[in-house]
Amino acid sequence: MNLIEFFTSFPEMSSESLRLFKKSVDGAYRSFSAKYGDAIEAVFDPVLYFLVWFEKLLHNSPWPLVILALLGLVYLGSRSIYLTIGSLFAFLFIGYFGMWDDTMSTVSIIGVCTALTIGFGIPVGILMSGSDRARAMITPILDIMQTMPSFVYLIPVVMLLGIGKIPGLLAVIIYAIPPVIRLTDLGIREVNKEVLEAADAFGANRMQKLFRVQLPLALPTIFAGINQTIMMALAMVVIASMIGVKGLGQPVLKAITNQYFTMGLLNGLAIVALAIIFDRVSQSYGKRMQQHRAGANE
Amino acid sequence: MSEVKIKIENLYKIFGPRAKEYTDKVKSGIDKDELLAKYNHVLGLDNINLDIKEQSIQVVMGLSGSGKSTLIRHINRLIEPTEGTVLVDGEDITKLNKADLLEFRRNKTGMVFQRFALFPHHNILDNVQFGLSIKNLDKSESKDKAMYWIEKVGLTGFENKFPNQLSGGMQQRVGLARALAIDPDILLMDEAFSALDPLIRTDMQDQLLDLQKNLKKTIIFITHDLDEALKLGDRIAILNGGKLVQDGNAEEILLNPADDYVSNFVKDVNRIKVLKIGSIMNIDGNINESNPSVMVDESIENCLPTMLESESGLNVLDNDKNFVGVISKNNIAEILRRSKD
Image 1 (cartoon, chains in turn blue, yellow):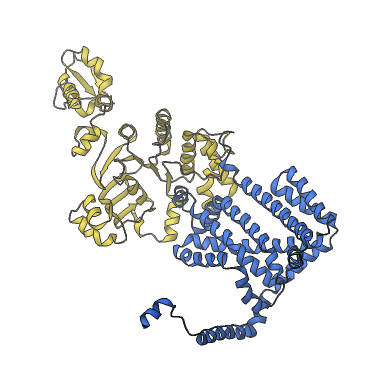
Image 2 (cartoon, chains in turn orange, brown):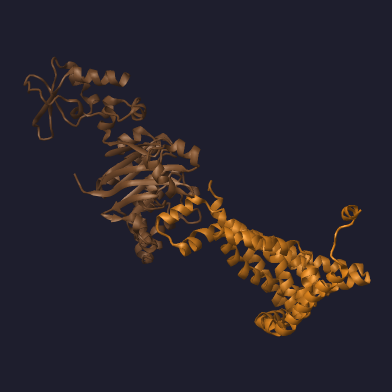
């Protein structure tokens, strides 16, 4: 009798204790964020100042100057005149259809995000590549960061820091940082063992090996990771706009809720244009860094 | 001859997590196969004792898996020994702390690798400079040194190329220049010429011998090629299954192989080309003024025409033209017969 019941309905905890469990966890987190929320927010103040300053710079500078600067970067990165001309048209299209300010906001947040992910991701990747134990510990965390629906980790971030730029930035970084970490680790582990042994034989210490042999040889792989990271950061723009990040995501969100098809499409296209520019520039920059691998038949 | 530069004593290497525990088992006589089958540990080196003389070329020979690459890596401690000592100039390398070991590698040993192991992201100049830059040597000084060695190995004009733009032979010259640039006492060459095609290999061997005339380094040269060993080695050590089965000069190895493994190794060698008259002459004989003379350090092959024309034999003279022995047709016939067996 009891046995049949055991097999037909899952022996779950009582709804009362489940409710209590959720309530106590939420309560604990709430009191934690009430106590430390301000302190943690203060930690991010410098980032916030920089982000605001950068965004204002892009907004307040004359638009032809900004376009010129951006095109300069595109050309320096890609060394391709076609891509530079293409980018010019993309920026003109964006500006003409009234998306200039939103695009600049998006560019600024993506720029800061990329800088931060590189700044954190590469050292973590180096750490992982140096120790199998660190790798075993960090890999599942990266898996969670990549697969956990972003809305779920938005909840505690918003509870802790409220809505605004910083929580948005954190959400984007959490989502976008795994590739750069993984590929830094992979790139360093893939460095030819014989070349490393040669460095050892000549008496290179750990730091010399890292900076003169491992990182330079891993750079193309690391750059593939940075490229992935930028793409993923762009993909998060719409979700980040839900918690108050300004940029191209907000009009898209508005278009979804109000069924403004053209508005959604235009802003979506602007995101696509940015993505293509970022992608091509960072890819061709990465390719140029591995010139020593080609050219055998020069 | 000269002083012992490197003294390897009672050196054991066992690969595996519990290596130390199995050293006694190896000492009590279990061999490589048994250690692997029963305990899943690999015997790398089994009680190696070897003296390497200063300024000589010591060849270490053996089939793959015999432990020769493991042995050479103990001299700059790229591999930690399980037991035993490696003395270089009387100093025990196995006892050096981390910092001293790095200093030792930076100054005392240069290494050349089978597959070159050049830094693909550095041009030739920076590759040759690598060891010097690790020592934080002054930039212009290190560039001068590197350029000197690039010229010495005949690669002037290629210093701005990248390794993959060069042929195998050229790449290995870069490897050689890189090792020599730090001016080490000891040159470790791990099958350095094995990956090169035969003509280039001969070329590199000649170049090495040529350089060695002036350099007088202590060279440890690993090879599995007997002809290369006989050509380069002042002494040849032969390894089998991690054991040192014989160490001697070319003649000792050819004339008195220590066991079947060595005789198998040397059976196809053209003895009359390699062996010198001195090694088969008869020192008891008396000088016969009517016979022609040959020099003691000439190869048997070179003396064959003179021998065939002579009626009763040859007188052997040393470099100062003193009589040191005689040689008869029978002596040579015996050597030829032995090569056939």
